[in-house]
Amino acid sequence: MTLSDPNNILAGAFADLDSGNLKSSSDSPSESKSEIRNEFAVRRATLDDSLMLESIEREAFPGMTPVTRIERDLTRQNGLYLAAIRNWQPDEQELGPRFAIATKAEKEDESFTARMRRNVDRYLLDRVNRPKLPPDYIAGFVGLWFVLDEAHVVIIGLRESDRRKGIGEQLLISAVEQSFENDSRVVTLEVRESNEPAIELYKKYGFQEVGLRRRYYSDNGENAVIMTTPPIQSDDYQKQFTELVEQHADKWGWVSRPGFAAPEGYVEEDETKGESEASDSTSADGDESESKPEIEA
Ligand SMILES: CC(C)(COP(=O)(O)OP(=O)(O)OC[C@H]1O[C@@H](n2cnc3c(N)ncnc32)[C@H](O)[C@@H]1OP(=O)(O)O)[C@@H](O)C(=O)NCCC(=O)NCCS
Image (cartoon, rainbow, N blue to C red; front, side, top):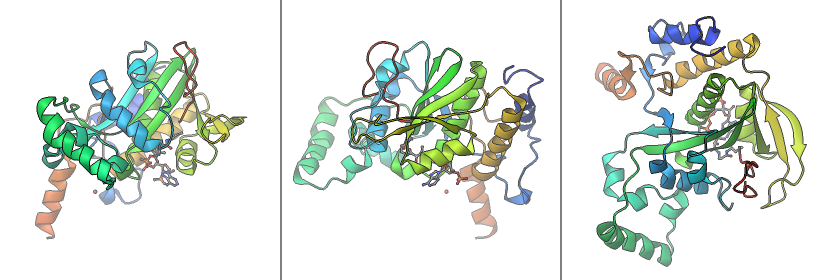
């Protein structure tokens, strides 16, 4: 069963969304944002995004040697990377590509060397050898590997400034949707046992703790918890998932994503802001083989 299967309850729910008939699951429909388009969209990541994805990886997992090999993963036959994107803002573009994609720590480093490097980048290197700005601003991304009948979330991470805005949840929703489409049986991942925000997110989507990998992370020897969903094609899971997707749209607005473009007529968030203002005056151990990297998701 796939999302495009008319018997699929998810397909039914999304058909409602497509026709703009979605009934809000919230008690106060007037507060629902499900007919507003979120400023972020999710799309498949490409090699043009790789510099920015690497920068996000450095920001999301500071102090770690890169946990994935993004460029290689972007071209893996059984891999899928999804990015949460929005348009660049003019002031971000003006700063030049090197600064625009830098991590928060790199931007805020006030040491003499860092300031010198930023000036050299901006006033010299950007002029003589200007790298191409990635096509979109990327807030975060999720990486999936499809192995046999399982979908493995190998990485999920966001820029610090973009957290707690429902974007990580949207990336996970999109990852599960793509796993449905791939006919995967379950979605699975490993997470540091101290990573409460991520564990809470996964639990919300039905992931259960099914095992422990002792001293899995090489930087501090922390254990990894293995978390796995129940069978995602089951009616029970799809019902639970559909409700969560509806709640997410109610809270954050509709997010365009692979297979679910925002229907025409959906209002951009900026437009509604304008209206309301007018009327009543936000594995490091992985190798080149098929073995999984030290998973950070
Ligand atoms: C984990 C991460 C992806 C969550 O993304 P996010 O966009 O900030 O999360 P969202 O705003 O979408 O929140 C969705 C849910 O996640 C959970 N959550 C997110 N941040 C949380 C926090 N600080 N504390 C507790 N729960 C949190 C909640 O269940 C939340 O649902 P709610 O809004 O109904 O409470 C993000 O914190 C991140 O990039 N962290 C650094 C990298 C990382 O640790 N990746 C995971 C590796 S396994």
